[in-house]
Image (tube, rainbow, N blue to C red; front, side, top):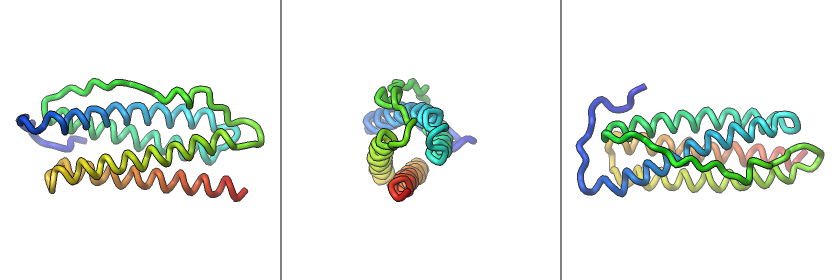
Length: 159
């Protein structure tokens, strides 16, 4: 799906904005990987968490694609700096105590909210341009991710 129909010429004020979008592109790549890994690690012990992580990975992948389209609009080739969260790599969610998973969920809630805040700030800076709608939508989806993770965490703590 192409979000923008023509290339936009760069202005001197675009540099900081586009650096931030490139950073977010890399973050979305890392989030896609991290959620996919978390889904695999949680599958046996916490299937509900695995399903949520799998869905979040798909949405983050869509964000990655949308940001890539946005960058291409400016003639930029997205070159991500891939940095998966190493703390998740050794996460073990087996056994009775869901403490490790609760820590990951709490961390992801914070990160999703920070992402939503960043996307809102980008949207506000564009004031009604096509890109603003893209960033507003991603901000909303990031906030929905935080809410979904909070719901899972709440259900886990009640059971």
